[in-house]
Length: 61
Image (cartoon, rainbow, N blue to C red; front, top):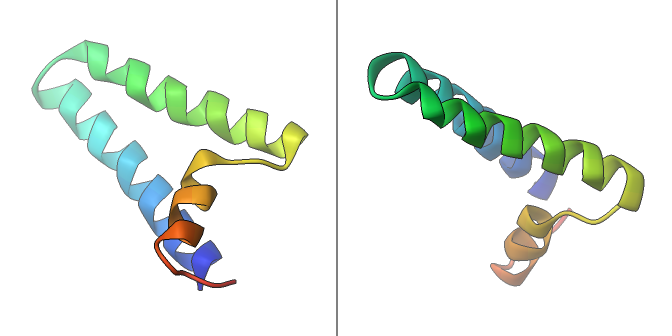
């Protein structure tokens, strides 16, 4: 369950930041880059802040 929620949230963050970059300000692409860097970092370290937050909120794997 946590993986499903994680993927939905990350996908929503990316799409939202792209829409904000198109319609509000191009600097919202920095948020997209931040998400990408965090995904790469979590691939190497096996730790992700969003997963920690979702676990503390009570979501199980």
